[in-house]
Image (cartoon, rainbow, N blue to C red):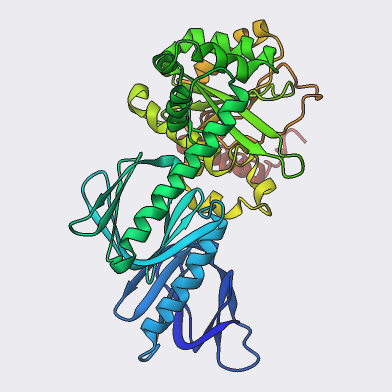
Length: 489
């Protein structure tokens, strides 16, 4: 059922010029809201929740900026502004939680609490009174009047319960800390719920690892499950510390069905070294026969060449290797490498092993379930922007010959145009890298055209001289001829 509130609203353009000012109502629906004036003839305009870029609240009025660079200011709610704000944020947060893949699995429990975020710089972001929801693979915090956020169990570093102050501290891999307080009598129940969810998650991973890696003891599998979780990248150099046979077993698990990809992975591994080579796996169970499906992929970084390579290895048909720049403009590639690995981890864990939102053209994803994520997920935008090219070379020698060109492009440190990459191994482009024209190449072409026009265009002096010559010619033509003399006649 739609929610309706009376209000006044203004629409401004990018230069803060008022384009529209009306008194009417706002109608809040599941995916959007409509602003309309008074009268049955005024249909108003619909604004989707996903199209809101920025939003601010001040002095009983709410303003927001859309991706179309239109600004709206909502006011005149009388004494119902707080009620409107709670309803608006509740509906919008539910939409965001659904469309940004925050809800992972089944909902277990929900509690009232107060939440705040302490970022890596020590700044406290207060979220106020909230609802905290525990799902199988995530924790969603939905504030009353602020934007919701999610904590994926795969990126939860560790947790701590402060029994003196009844505070739950959640420490994340990105350096942030989430403090959950004011749980009241639900504190102990919340503690048991979180520990139960973590125990079930690791239990599922260990059971899957037992099926695909027989012969390893429980301690080894538990250590591996703690690092792997739902698809985190495992540094190859650290596998031997867990078990001496683990590197060979995981390489066989990843590349047993794809020996062609193994040859190309060895070439990259020789370039970057074992410390920059990563393996990862995720497991899914078929609903019909309960068969375990294993997805595998590798990541290899060559910081000296500003390159990170990614490729799926599960099936023999997997032949594409995607290359990403580590840094786009300036900086040290070694320092930024961990952030790029984290971006790839987030893409594979959150999207359940589906890499298509990273490389597909935006027009293809416009009607997919990833359309909101393309606007709102910062890591996805960064990955798409840093995507350099895709290589589908079949043979190892062809692949090695093309690497030098990829390295050369990666070291230019110039922004790239988003490439349109299409799947399909049967095309005539197999064996060649699909290259996107960079902004630098386009700029060079434009500059050449401008220089050519400059050469052709006459200067000011040439224009004046040309004008004088034209005037002299016209005067000469206009001068009358002399009559012949009488003597000659």
